[in-house]
Image (cartoon, rainbow, N blue to C red; front, side, top):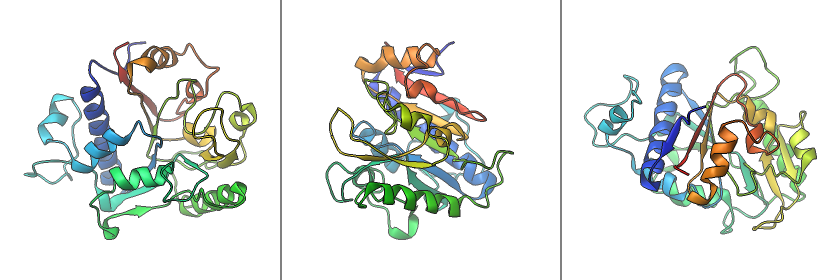
Length: 264
């Protein structure tokens, strides 16, 4: 299968991903008045979040064949997210306080939300500082169940349907905090949010993560995988050759999965 968005340079990759996310957010907001977005963590999305925060020139969307809805304001120098209509969540979190340098919330706050007023933002962060972590997972799931209770998308109401979930790719094929050495977490179908054991890679702390069925019920899943060292892995997963890896298990049952990575 031909890659949907295979990029020659890191700059092209990041700008294309940002444009795709901005377009998807505006489309959802134009259709239903809001857009639910689950954010990726780690350090890889930092440059992506900075670009989204600052916006992109409108002509870039035309060049990339990403038409914007009529609701997007005309005459502006840049187009960014419909901030007041976006509801932000997290795909996973490290079990650390929100001001810890390892916190996924802190990273997004520094890069994506920088300069935004509290009035512009609606967000529900995972409380990684909860003790025990299982309490944090239960609390976040309870929030999701309350927030998504009136969602009527599709016929399957067993899981929330996010408009957009942004995911990364680890060198071992993990995504969010679903790791290949934790088959029990990958097989979970009842819990929307799980507390999972610390991985073998840094940071070696417990995590909170959305479960695989939640990822698979999203309208749009975007895999942003910068770095030449992971390009071959990303390509093999996109071709369906690694269904044994967590990232290869993400299928977006009723939506779409878009992979963006450098040319191998």
